[in-house]
Image 1: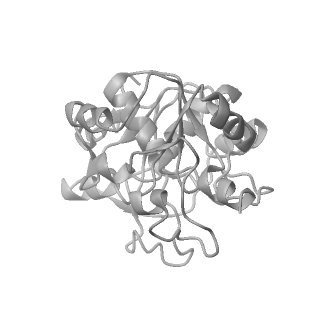
Image 2: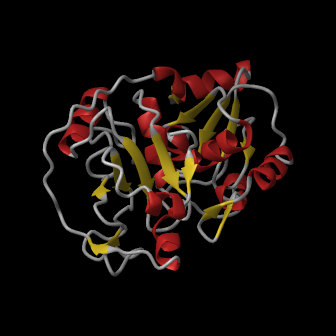
Length: 272
C-alpha cells in the first residue's frame, strides 16, 4: 500500500480487487456479546483477526504479546492470506486495535497493509453495506513471515536505555495513568511511568474515530518534547502504542520506530 491509512471511500471503491483482503481486528470485550459492536456487524467479506486468542503469545503472563514468527505465519495461512494480498485492517471503535495489527504485519516483514480510517463506525456513518459476523473456513494461504527483531523491544532493553538514553520512550496512555494520578485498569497494577519517558496520549491524535490530519498530528507531536532519537512506543499492553507509532509515520514518514511489547503491564509487574 502507498499509505498506512485509507478512507472508507477508498475501500468501498476497491472492494472488487481480487487481491484485497479485509481484516476485522475488533477485540472481544465480552466473548458472548461483543459489547463494542453489539449488532455483530462486519464489512462484507472481512476476516476476523483475533488478536487476543490467536495472534498473541499464549505462553506469556502478559497480554497481547507478539506471537512467534512460526505461529503468526501459520495463523495467517489459516486465514487464507497470501503474500500477493493487499490488506486493510479495521476495528469497531474507529482507531484502536487496528494499528496494532498493521504494526504486527510490518514486524513480520509484510508492508502491503493499511489501517481503515474511522473503522466500522465510519463505514456505517457513510451508509455502506454490512453483513453479520460469521465464522468461516478459508483455503490455506501461502503467507510467509519473517520477523524483524529490531522493531520489538523487551524489558531488558528498556532498563539499559534508562542510563544509555539512546532511544526515546513514548507512552500512549492517559496523562493521569502516566503521572500516577489515575489508576490502571488492571487490578493490582500501579500507575506511573518508565523513567525518562514522555507522554503522548493516543486520544489526542484522533477524533470521532478518525486520525487527525498530517498538519494537526505534526502540531501535537512537536509540542511533546520529541527529540531526534530512535523511538520506542509503549502503552498499557502494546495496543494503543501502535496508534502513536502510526501517527508518527503519517506525520513524518518512515523512521526508527519500535514497540515495547510488554509495555506498562510488564514494567509495573517486574518493578513493583
